[in-house]
Image 1 (cartoon, rainbow, N blue to C red):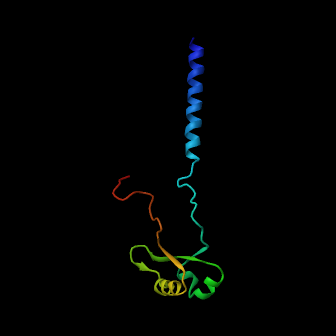
Image 2 (image 1 turned 60 degrees about the horizontal axis):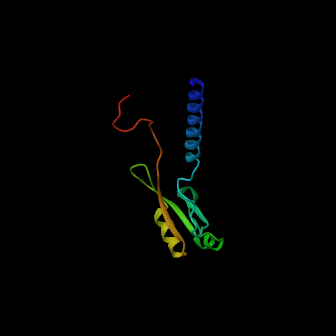
Image 3 (image 1 turned 90 degrees about the vertical axis):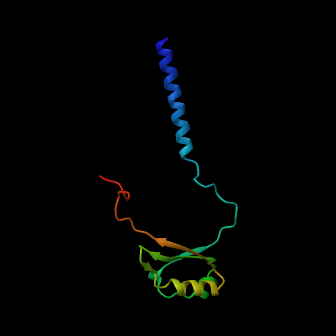
Length: 109
């Protein structure tokens, strides 16, 4: 009787483990059926960009760095935005962040 109970518990634990492993392999977001666009990521590192040439190459979306840290605005942000929009490109923005500590704010070690 004890051996049978141990066997049932082990089987139950294995099934539970496999169930949870399988859950972790699912997508955080399901793939979209929406159209996909060709895009690029730009910042001050690329310098001046010819957006007419970008558009002619088949690029449809530009994600551009807008800022970094708490006080830095990307030097090319305004010109990148103006020129990308003037050439009919879709535009998105991002803030660049660099972690400086592994501790959360307000926590003590």
